[in-house]
Amino acid sequence: MTSLRKRLDNVLAELDIIRSGLDNSDDLPPCCLTLCKDGKISCDVNGPLSLEKFLKECRKCKTKMRYFLKQME
Image 1: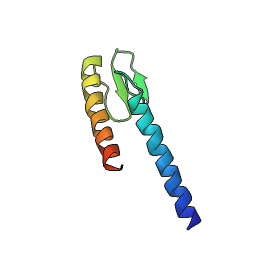
Image 2: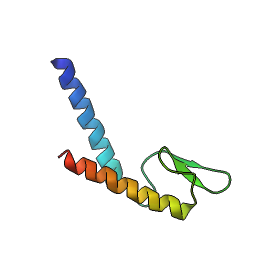
Image 3: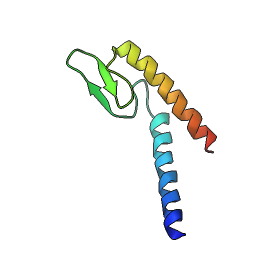
Image 4: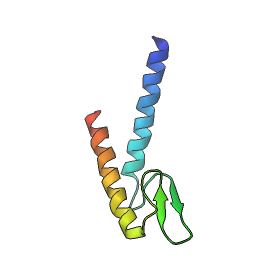
């Protein structure tokens, strides 16, 4: 049982980190970005895209993550 409790505590801590990252980020995401030589941007989920398209997709992704986090409260 202790192992399950530790795992749950770790998951809750990770969710807190994600929530904090989302709450404290501006336009650019709090996740991993890759700037390509051709001026495009990509991350683990989207890209490579132009800055305008990337930010649009980023906002969608952040909204989806916030929704899922809200469901876990």
